[in-house]
Figure 1 (tube, rainbow, N blue to C red):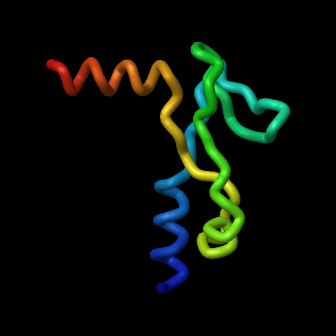
Figure 2 (tube, rainbow, N blue to C red; figure 1 turned 180 degrees about the horizontal axis):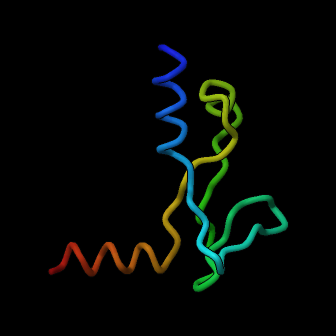
Length: 72
């Protein structure tokens, strides 16, 4: 893979924090509204493969919004 492609994929996988979001004691980004993680750690073997230790995750309020959109 080219470096440009890799960089773009990694940027797409990044979580954009909202002003109310915060970093928890475990180092993950948490939602400031529902206080559930917006990131999760990769298993150790996958982290080595991807060169990153965490990936985006859906917090509870994002999940509720998605389910509401899907139901409409």
